[in-house]
Amino acid sequence: NAGVMQNPRHLVRRRGQEARLRCSPMKGHSHVYWYRQLPEEGLKFMVYLQKENIIDESGMPKERFSAEFPKEGPSILRIQQVVRGDSAAYFCASSPAEVWTEAFFGQGTRLTVV
Amino acid sequence: KQEVTQIPAALSVPEGENLVLNCSFTDSAIYNLQWFRQDPGKGLTSLLLIQSSQREQTSGRLNASLDKSSGRSTLYIAASQPGDSATYLCAVRNSGNTPLVFGKGTRLSVIA
Image: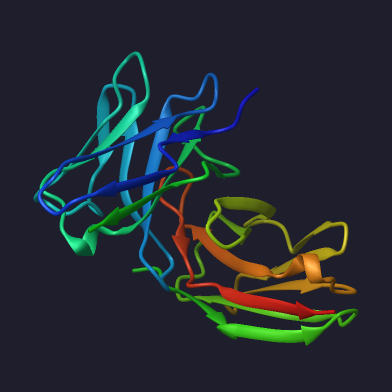
């Protein structure tokens, strides 16, 4: 049973471009959390999704950021018109149910905006 | 609003020492607390999970304790090794379906 898979592991984008980050949850898991880790900072919650639903997006910036978790396929975090301040590591974690016990994370996507 | 603080921010010890990492949280009504390890440029590895009804958990040379009433947890590492060098993150969950709230971590260096 593979763990949480994120790709790409590293992503370089020029200012103004779009970044698409993918998270494939563990098999049988239908809930996903996205977190962002800025340099020298702890992980900050961004968005919580269930398949085809956004449960809580209170941690996600209102502009340029969006997330989805379709019925089929990975969860996608999209950042439009990236700026240098978006450079960070983005992690996701998945769960089989609404009530979580232990959280398992993917290896993250490191976004660099040049 | 839950806030998690980890002290010290960085720690350097000689190999073989026993050491304690501290984590404190402002809202004691937690669901569980989890300790993670993060190597530079890597993801998070779950080390120990303590449910709110538990006082401690052990795995190998690691022991984590939880004192909910005082809002504290400690991670004890026995007989430290250079391979233990990493950043250790503490995170709490206030209920079963709410996000983890993370501290900024303690960066540990174990010198051979």
